[in-house]
Image (cartoon, rainbow, N blue to C red):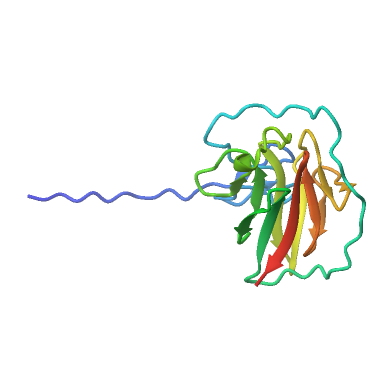
Length: 177
C-alpha cells in the first residue's frame, strides 16, 4: 500500500521593515520604502572598520544619459586591478560582503573589500522607470559617485561611466546591452 502526503502550503506573510515599519510584500528582500535589508546574511563576517585615511576621490561630472533599459546589465570594473564583474540587476542587489542564499547580495570580498572598508550591506542597486538607482545603506565609510558622497538611504541615478568609491574601493561603472 502506498500513501502519498499532501502538504498544504501556507502563503508567506508580508514583513514589516525594522527601519521604517513599511509592510513589504511577502518574499521581498528589501524594503520598498527605504531599501533596508529584510533578510539576514547566512554567514558571520568581520565587522567593517573605519578607514585610516579618507579615500582619494576626484569630483567630476558625467554627461552620459541616465537611461538603463530592460535587458541592460551593469559591468563593475575594480580599479586598479581591472577585474570585472557583470550583474543583471533584475532584482534589487546589495553590494557588500558575504552572501545570501538567493544571490541578492553581490560579495565584494574577492576585491579586498574588508581592507577597503566596504560594509557588509554597503549600497543597494535597483531598477526603476528606465534608470539604475543606487543608495548607500548607512555604510561606515560611505559611498561616492564621481567624488560626491551620497547621503545614506537617499537614491541617486547611476549613469554609464560613473566612478564609484565604496569605502576606498574604486569601481568604474559601465552599462552593456
